[in-house]
Length: 115
Length: 115
Image 1 (cartoon, each protein chain N blue to C red):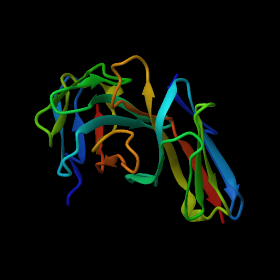
Image 2: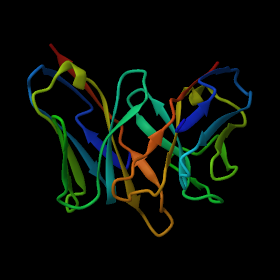
Image 3: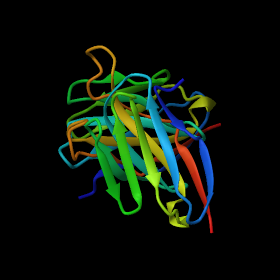
């Protein structure tokens, strides 16, 4: 199994450019997440999708949009990139949040630099 | 401020010493995850605690959940250089009836173990 696959792994953008980060999981998970990680800030939740067909804002949603395309795929879009969005982005998925013996699976991350 | 606060933010210990990392929530906890991250790498699942008073161990790492205090602690016994990295706690937090599936993380604790 591939688990959680994120693309691209690295990206450099100019201020104002747009791009979409792709995420796909092959574990039939219901819930999917996008986090960003900045030095000293841990993981901050951008958006999540508790189930197919739903999306909700997390802690830092401004400047981002998401699409839960189907059960497998959850994309994150930056419409007009800003230097403050320079970060490492992680996608994650889980079958059922907070159920015993379930764990959150993470992708390998996308390093995004906005110049 | 983040909904999950970790303390300390960084920790430097000598090999062989015991240490504790705390994770405190400002809201009611519904399950708590501990992850470890090596610098520049992905996240490694350590354990998940669901019930108040629950305690789990993996090798030399033990985690406990105190639901009344809305707190979890991660204890490492006889630390080794291989324990070095960033430790992150994540949890489901309830605020109203619309936050099902929301999983947020603390800001992380950077652990350095000197040989």
